[in-house]
Length: 248
Length: 340
Image (tube, rainbow over all chains, first blue to last red; front, side, top):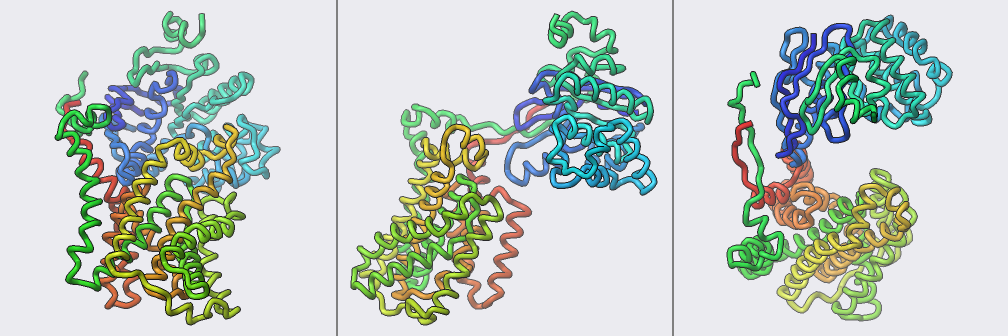
């Protein structure tokens, strides 16, 4: 259903993504793992289309020139030059790195803003759903986003992304800066979302340990290139991956 | 590997001579020395020769002084906005305070311009810094609003209390001995200001300034009092503004409430945007372009502002990097197509 072919992104003369291809079938969870500067965020920008936005801003400010090459296919249609807002309408929704929740709006308002693309029945239903998978949010629904803890903010960010009724959810580093307990809790929730809503999910993460068990297929990025790929079993058995991500 | 490999992209590469002149090889040959000196000399000689070239047009010589007044303000604005992170709309305040102090010293105590200008510059800058001191914790648009309030407030106070000559202003000040002294004084001040500030922002104190702009909390965490540095930044910008104001008073031999005018707050911003923010020289270039345009448009009366707004909008939308940033890139880098 979703496929990226030969993605290359240059920040000026620096190669950030080198010929990365990945595909995601329906109702699957795809993992993208890599250290800092491996190109995870750039990949997410390229998949969600935000890179086009950044490209334009940099061009206007006379900053770096960003070059994007390669194709992004979605249900057989090439959406390579489609704006991020249109991609969201088509069902590709990004949950951005560092959460980026609206700090001056309450939890409920945050969710409603996320539901801009949904009709009122979907909005109601999805809010209920978000509160069932993240019961912690229900208690806090009147609190301002800025006063939530890191874990609660992340739940809210995922919930907000769900409100846009995605068919493909892109999670950029959802476990960033969270304690191991919360990390496992969120990983479980991500799997539940896939199982219960039938949403395909691409998750990029540094911490492979909590995420690896829930994915169907994974890619390891290193210096912008995809070096290893395979099912979660294959990846966990790969000695290099083991050494780098599981410390044994 | 199945991807078609005829894709090309444009690459930007530093020119060889640019890389060489970054280091000690800058003085290795005339070519390198010329490469470094040429742009600076164009600016310096261009400004120094301008009064001579304009000898036949006394009106435009006066405009040249005006360009310098605005250039000093614009340099201060660019420095405050892009190196200290304070967007200040207080240009009118600096000019007005500088002009009034110089005028009072000259008319009441009979001090000559070569005393009043330095005194008005320092005292005025101190006064402006004290006035703006309570607003320094404010950031972004809040500081801009508050700093704009003072130049709006000052003329009303002078009007209401009928002090300093009230609405008539202070008239009959001494002028500069001759037009040449006036122009070369202004041009010298602009050149010294722009090169001194360019040097300062790369020194240690400049690093702190830029740190305050980027992340003031991290600067505080390093044990540096940011209010001191913000006050110092405002003082530097106010020195430039009050100097321009004091000179302006002696150029017109008059100080009045129109010197708190909005023009002095707005045109420096426009010039900085057009010339390229964060380059300091860009601010001067912006003034050299915008102030004569504004003089040419004088016939249109208030439509002047409309034309200004159009120019500004056009620049922000189509070339928000500014002239100086664009030209620097072309001077230092070349482009070529490379196969991906």
